[in-house]
Image (cartoon, rainbow, N blue to C red):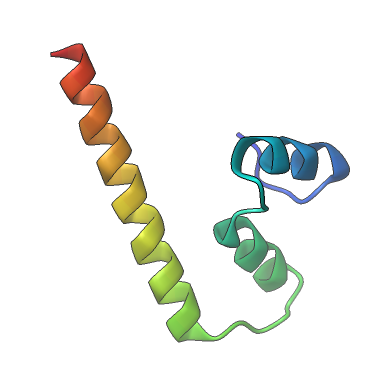
Length: 64
């Protein structure tokens, strides 16, 4: 799992998504002690979970 911002991981995310995911950016800022607006974190995590749920449902449907 790619979790830290490195040149190799940035290339991976750019190739995969076209951008560095906000979840990674927020985690990187927080790990460095840089504050991030709590409301933005909440929205980002909720959107990320919704995407995870949707993709998981699609995978389950493919396997059925």
